[in-house]
Length: 313
Image (cartoon, rainbow, N blue to C red):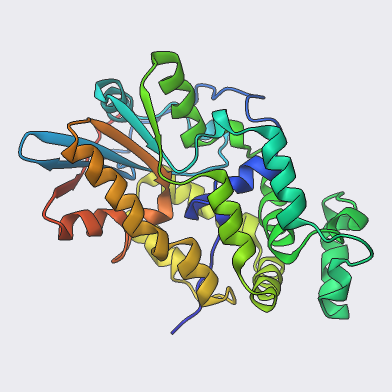
């Protein structure tokens, strides 16, 4: 089986934004251009689906956890569906995470103690690559040396993006969490920040080290920019194809961070439908697409799931 490429920014690791980026409320999404497609071109699309069964309706929106200004404004069809919804489902309610509790968990799960360091767990070649990365992105190598491999991998995957202007405060889930809070809508967490950290830190040391090494090798910034373009184009097939590109990411990490989480997300969406909520689910875009994505899982359970068409802008 091909190993696949993985980024926490779109596979749904909300904690990547929580622990490694600037304060979440630092910047609000700004309006941006929304151009009409050229004559003869296909109508615009989004990674946005309507789920229905009988008279019950819900919505699914694939998120990017670190966003940028050019992702906004969102299509009117998405905004209108959110207004009609009675509940918002997210992976993690990042607006309610306890900073002190998060810091304590990071210290206990993500950092070496005493005289131990990352340098004791990697080859000289990997250490050299990490030090070059730190120099390039002005990150203290001594600080990185105290990170366990999963924390180092998140840093390597996200720091180039934050340096390029992407941030958690502009992420799609953050945007709707703020709107839901202002409208006093019900907010449901499918997971929690604590659960995600436990998942990331639970992989064996050798697997974590391989994941960190793959993050160093693969030019994550270029790929995430491509994924952002795919997200803005609403191209589910292209996103799924990118996820399945050949990569050195360990398969156990890929499945643990992606497919193994999808059934529970589908369960949460289904519970809301059965409970009579008009739920608006926003989770990492990679969880929505593909043969084992939330969309296909709900279809297999008998729900009608259809991509919501967007009017030409």
